[in-house]
Length: 181
Ligand SMILES: [Zn+2]
Image (cartoon, rainbow, N blue to C red):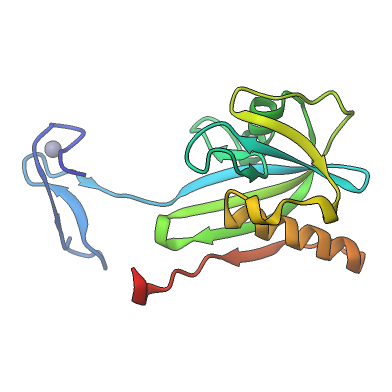
């Protein structure tokens, strides 16, 4: 960030009294611009022994498969956001079963929350943000063509749980190798 969103003067990145890390501070009006992680919310829609995935029609990772999801909006709960994303990407209203994975990427300041959801029927179709929408059995999942590690984590935990006959909430994180950054 370069300029203050309140008064449009330049900001500087510096230590703030009583805070344990530097912040963007406007020397002109005094506003401290806090920056915090963003939440990506989504659903893994289920039908019998299959799951629904969408092929992305937008960057980043255009052309790769993904568990439907996107950035949470200011006026909605994570469950509402997750259902809205499925509606936008696959034109279908799902019923949320429960929270499935919470996956942090500290390096990019992203937190993914994926729910399991039940498809009501097979009337899904391709939304504007998708190139294709398709059901996959476990042995049909395009593991090499997944858009994001959060989706791979979500799918792996889902099929593991299914094999073990249990369902729980899984916490995961993407660890960057800081030596190479
Ligand atoms: Zn300012």
